[in-house]
Amino acid sequence: MKQTTLLLPLALLACGLLAPDAATAQSPARPAATASASPDGFATGVWDLPGPGIPGDLSGRLFRKGRAVYEIDAVLVPDASGPGGSILGMARLLAGPKAGSLRTLKGRFSGGPRGRGSFQLTIFGPGPATGGPVPRVFLKGTYHDPNGPFLPLGAFQGHWKRR
Image (cartoon, rainbow, N blue to C red; front, side, top):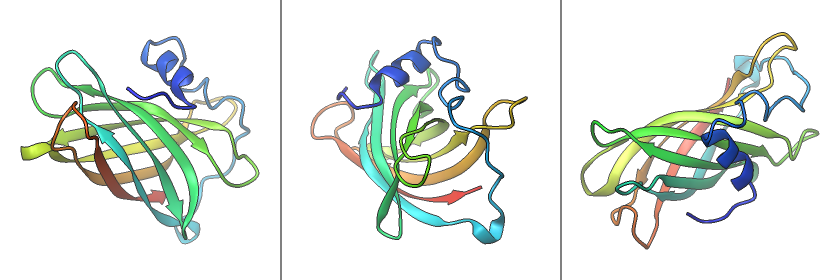
């Protein structure tokens, strides 16, 4: 697994030492975006499927109008029952007044033949002072990693929408 700037918070989250809301606690709450103000964008990055006893990972960026808005890093944890599994990770906001703040992300991926599959994930932002994190961004996409956990790495692409 490659090293990233989000590796420590991601490792803490995966080990249960960092609660999902702890990573977003430093940022003040903001009102939820309305449907008319919801920007859409695309996402792209590297996808490395898990292997036997080894989690996989994904790393990439979400873009809006050609500008990177989020950087994401996550662990792919395979299901014991078959192809697919959970996605657990962190997102770093790259633009705007809260640039640099961390968000948690969770999702699912499903596998198909020859290293192809799809995924969905949600990036959670800070919620009200009395509650936990709330969904802020929904990302849906596909991946292709024909070599599985071996080099060269695969890739993903998708589209996101602010909630």
